Image 1 (spheres, rainbow, N blue to C red):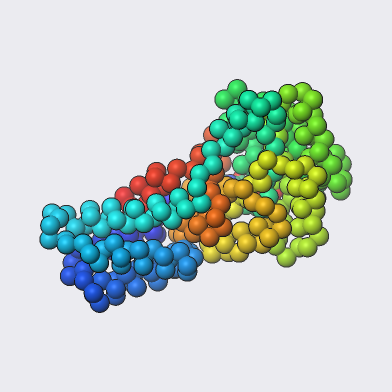
Image 2: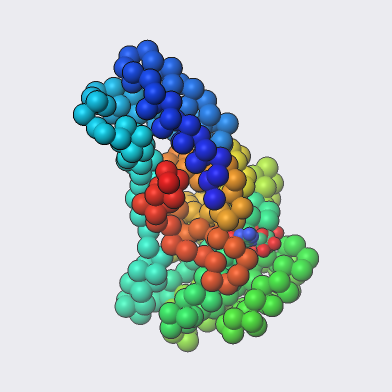
Length: 301
Ligand SMILES: Nc1nc2c(ncn2[C@@H]2O[C@H](COP(=O)(O)OP(=O)(O)OP(=O)(O)O)[C@@H](O)[C@H]2O)c(=O)[nH]1
Ligand SMILES: [Mg+2]
């Protein structure tokens, strides 16, 4: 995870520990660092923010007073990265579900994103984990578009042991989701997870269909699932989906395979929406709440 970013951070500690850390010397090192962040898929505005903050924070530091300048630089970088990752706030999905449950209502979550990002898998993982926590879950097979999509979700549902609502292929996905929400209300099911077809931002019909699902089901949360390997296009995906529907949070899937790591740092900062969970593998337990402090610790280690 974050191998490339880590290598760049390590290089930064070394060069900063060597130079005078003043004026132009410092600026030069940090300008170089900014470019390297961009090469690691950190969005330009975020890379600029990080390097400006580092200039401000490091400019006034008297390094002679510290026995270990490397550790000091690392700590300051950690502070800056944390401010990036925490900018959009925090959303605890399990707390959210329990609040709805206490109010006697199902939590309705719809998952959107482009093709193959990890929507269906993330839904299966979440259903599994919620069940383990003793919450009841129902799935809505609202990807009535891609062939095999309903069977894929059905296999998960059977393995995990949750109920799934489906119609025919080609059926109205909003109607499937609506049925699942009604079922949950009638039977006191705690959580409704709505799987939707992957869609490109350029496909107007599918975007309209997604808007309809949201209009009809009025979900509590609309979660954008992004593949951590996507790189800078993740920001573009965020923009397109946010324009179509109100996104409440992000799942970063496949973080286990994310070699560069930059998109993970930028996306939530730019969208102003929190990363809620991260996917860390292909197993049902490989979905973890996003912990900014934990991620930063890992990045600067
Ligand atoms: N390594 C790893 N693989 C994952 C993760 N999440 C999903 N995958 C894999 O990514 C592939 C696509 O996942 P899906 O869940 O089918 O993606 P989707 O967004 O539902 O795809 P469409 O329905 O076609 O749009 C599958 O092979 C998953 O096993 C993860 O966190 N880590
Ligand atoms: Mg799918």
